[in-house]
View 1 (cartoon, helix red, strand yellow):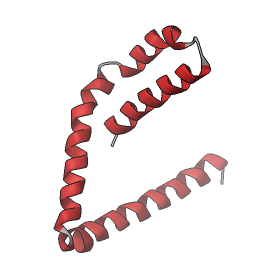
View 2 (cartoon, helix red, strand yellow):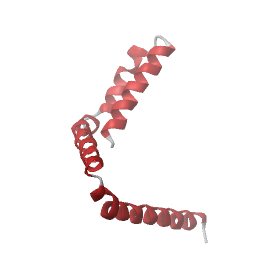
View 3 (cartoon, helix red, strand yellow):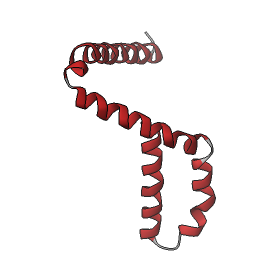
Length: 92
């Protein structure tokens, strides 16, 4: 077997196991805890609000405004943390 076939098979097995775990948790665990279900719904709805920012070019805006923040190392780190936070929230 080639390396690509082996890795594809492993990835398929892992994704299948994750899907089965998701199905089991949806059927048995989430109905037991309505508060947890509410938190998940809130997180998904909030992430949906940030999705247009990503679709309409937050990456391009990050590249565009980067030269204005390269003055100090601290400002670079702060800029990337803010940008990463927005991207992380929008992809949930």
